Length: 403
Image 1: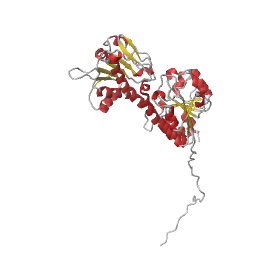
Image 2: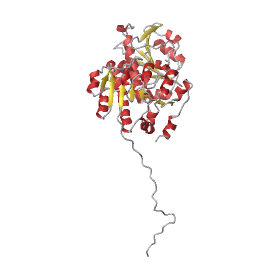
Image 3: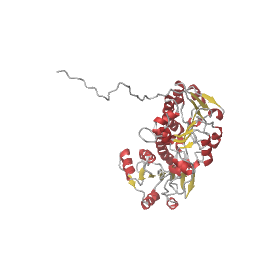
Image 4: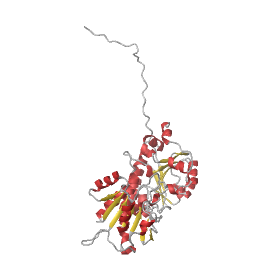
């Protein structure tokens, strides 16, 4: 018995429309790397190796004369990689994408041309309303690389700089404990028969964990304070050993500070403000010749006696306690820090080229979009808009209308 094919009355031979993704054309980029003259900045955002990759992929790169000298990259290193060395900063700022390792300055804003893309860090305490207004008028796209997220939701540049800062903090502490830097003459790790130096670390985040690893590796006796039990547990698990940990109880902290040789301030800001947990009274009770390294100083500091210093003049003494409070501590090891930044930024620049421009990257990459604080005349960072009482525009809404 043959079966009949039943055709529904709703059946139609009219083809249905299918949405086809429009793949943007690859774009050739013109990239400028200026020399940093502010913020005691020694880093450079792209190494010669990264520049070489960009050049080989058909992009043009201009580098200002002596831009990499503090990271021990010579002009010849960049020229051999294919970059053009220029002596006029204004010529660098003619590039379509400006990549900086320090925040953009007032002088640089004046020579910045309209419609450009600027990738740099942002230091909120140094921002001024006039600077934001000038940048808004120039219709630029500004990306804070310290706010860029990776696919895991973490901040890759912040994390690597935090690791560097934590390790560097302990190394600086060991240096200023020694007689060669007018210290009290204590060896951080001690020797057989002589106990090691005591180190108090405030904060169990990435900086605190890196400082803990370095201090333990040198043989110091370490105590870690943080108000997050989870972070304290995670730190102990990550370093693979039990050590003294405590919540920030003022009484317990005061006792520990009176006996310690080194204090590392590495607390995270809460709503943009770093909590002040060490009072002037506590510092006055510390041993003469002890050392404070306040890594949190770039967000206000967590120690009452701290004030910002520079790489040229990094320390001061109060109550006979040496204070090291350099905001940009990672810049003290500029070559390592430059490589770390370059490893993150170079693939992003390549992605901008492959996707046909910065707009396509912002459309498809939420993590990079997170770093945008200005977009073609609009303020897209809520904290900046609120601080200067300016209008805030959600970049996600703009991107939904972008084709």
